[in-house]
Image (tube, rainbow, N blue to C red; front, side, top):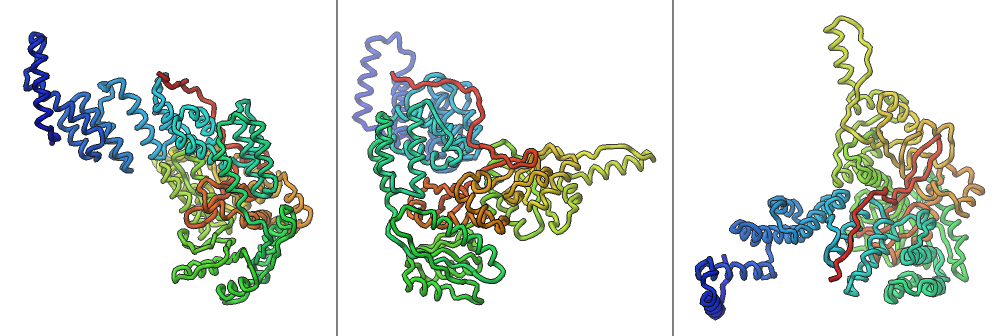
Length: 636
């Protein structure tokens, strides 16, 4: 329905049209009624596009009643509103209803930008970049939006440095201080996500980028020791006086990282000091104490007290009250999953903790939470999900899964498959194997559909009545394999995959395929395998690693748990930062650590690939070099 136009407006419009007709009647091809109708329709378009009826359904209806350029305007507006609503599929449908060949040049960029945002929402960042406008000139607003989409797409693909460079490029074009501050926060978030091994090696001739890198390095160092933070940032300001980062942003950083209690604490560590978990406990305890003794940021040391949780039928709340009464400011532990399950159940009946509790494992319910409780550990599901993310970023969209027939294997299969399909991948085959035996031929044959090839050979032999020489033909529709296995199993599975004609398929795995100790002769069979692991294991170049190797040679099999102990100590002092800011990361020995909305801590790991029996770190944060059009903003 057309909007109502006031009688006064119609009278004025009618008089003006009559006047125009009386002056040049021979140049008017339309009747007075037609001209009035056109004027009303033009006003309708402008009023309907100015936000008076902001629903996509309204514009879809108007589009169905229109043709040509008018219809295109309505369809684009409907698509934009559907996108804003989160109805991505319907937004895409409306764009597809537009005849691209008939659209005005002025609307091409608008459509391309929306198509790119839809691709990004559909977890297809590479396509989003391809869909971005290729025009060499555009308005400032369009130039900024192209940059923002490109940066988000690079973040989604893990190419953090490219995202940072892109946002630096568009930063000077923002006219609004609030928008520029949001852009600086996005740059800072990408810098926080960079692994330390990358950040520490990056150098740039671009002074703005170099300033960001050095600022990030200073602040990251303050996660462990913030005593010199204020002085270091003052020195940074002297070195980069023209840097676009404002005083407000710097003040916020100082507040975030100086807002750490520096007085001495009593830390209660709750671990099973006896029984079957004793070896695990010793490794965690050793790491925790190593971090504690290496911490020189305070004039005096905090007090560490260990409490035994190996008591049968432990009443956790009773123990909790005991350690609080004895003055604990922080609690680390427990590690037993059954006790952590108890804690989360207590939250449901209104119990909450006076002092922070940092558990060293996770409850079975992944959405579980409790007030003032934080869950941290070496969660294998995190690694499986990151394997899915890397595979998709590397354009491997058709997967096969090979995991042990165990609860652990099922957990990793589920985590990988959920994340992989969420990102647009398709799992075409999945098989379980018995990790108690060394014969993996049968599950691999089933994974690769080799039994069908054998069946066809037998049928042809029976038909011809003669023995045939042939090479089994595996399925060709998979482009990656996700493998969950221990190092012992992986050393047999990788050669078996090659034997069964799958040596050319990329294999992605988790840290469990690597012992963490260099053994070239034993790991030769793992050549070609890509896996994620801890910085502690892959980049062993710090003092604490040397301390571990020297003083605890008997704990080499528990090296990652030693790293867990180190990080659990430092995380205590960074809980406020991690819980308050979504972009915050703690750069630890177990990974780049962040916190989700349920107070669960997760680790972003590094990647490595076996070559000649050695696990070699690979940098997955750098975008491959590719020519792209040079664009600029129209300043006119």
